[in-house]
Amino acid sequence: MKKFAKILLACLCLLLASAAALLGYSEWTVSDARHYTYDDVNAVPYNRVALVLGTSKYLIGGSPNHYFKYRIKAAAELYNSGKVDYILVSGDNATVQYNEPRQMRRALIQAGIPANAIYSDYAGFRTLDSVVRAKEVFGQARFTVVSQAFHNERAIFIARHFGIDAVGFNALDPSAYQGIRTRVREVFARLMGLLDLYVLDKGPKFLGEPIVIGGPVPCQALSTLGTRQPCLPIPAAKTPATPAKPAQPEPSAAVATSASAAVTTLAPAASASSAATEATSAAAPTNADTATD
Image 1 (cartoon, one colour):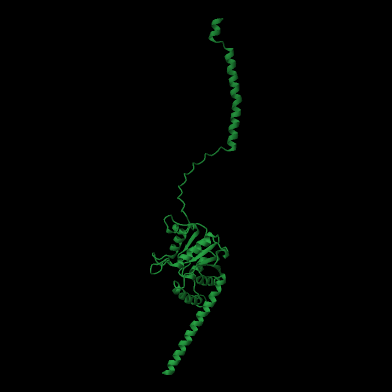
Image 2 (cartoon, helix red, strand yellow):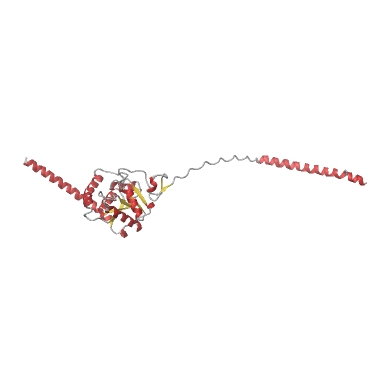
């Protein structure tokens, strides 16, 4: 019995050591992406689009989520500094009440960002989904990721695995006390990220039709899409054109020539007749002439 307990304990220790080794490896591998992140907005290279990774505006207890607040602030700073032209907010849209992209879009508009510069991705259920969809759906092969430093590292690691040239702008990080649960979760999220990419070969849950950032999106007049990103109104129905009257056939050249010849032939005859009449009138005396003689 003691021997069995020792074997079980040894197996447990080996399992824990393996798990610790995997966690350490994933932490080291993903952290290497920090070389592509920036803390100073002036040092961030220009990219056409910034990808803001989603989080809830409020915590479970109803207090403000500082991760959300600082990501919005960082995204607005990028835009106002001319480092990006458009902002893509990507997050979970699980229910009508929980809609991360809608909350981020509203917060950015309140921060002074033009509504037509903000695009929304409502299928960013995970970091992997947000990153890959930015390329496959929104057509961006390079962009700037906006989140906290630890999150940016994982997002950039995923992006570069899929051939995306991504950099990160680090939003301000809440204090260690406020973010302790998030930090612990991130340790395991990095390990799961490695498993997703190299073992499970996972991709986004949904893709969809391409959306061109910077180009108007056709939408129905009453569609909610019109409140999410710029859209083209459906053109008004055209009134049917009035049918044109059939054109009168023009006389052919032969007919016109014949008519001209006939007029030319009749003209001398008419002149001769007129001359004979005048001669007769001159020869015959009128009643007035007879009375005078």
